Length: 159
Ligand SMILES: [Zn+2]
Ligand SMILES: [Zn+2]
Image 1 (cartoon, protein in one colour):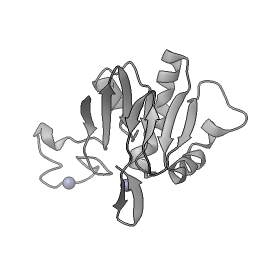
Image 2 (cartoon, helix red, strand yellow; image 1 turned 180 degrees about the horizontal axis):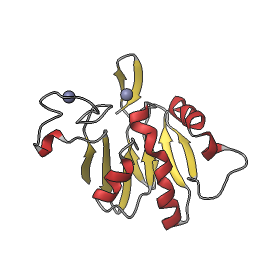
Image 3 (tube, rainbow, N blue to C red; image 1 turned 120 degrees about the horizontal axis):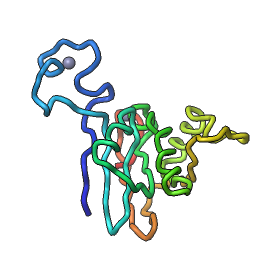
């Protein structure tokens, strides 16, 4: 299994817009941090955990050509805003993108990306296949995934 950290930044990324602190003004490449996401490559499968606002940039940077599923930790926008970009993988594969998350996360996605889930869809939008996850192990294409519920302040999320 190969895990690539696509982003390790805060919700606003580093540097943060308008911030003049030493870290945000630093020229050290380690102070350029995109929003949190990881890519997992295992047995020829390709998964990402979360699709934040930097998802397109992260995918282009690692030249990712194959994506078999998206797993969501939680519904905050810095982890979900890039969902629209999965349509590029729809175009390549001709398949709907399986997405996995807590029921509350999936509900939030249907509200924030209403056009994706609309009865009448306009052409070119992302196509997803929704998979609610309970707090127990599950398989994606024979790969075992074990969600670990942790608290994100007062919000239960999955690690
Ligand atoms: Zn700063
Ligand atoms: Zn969060």
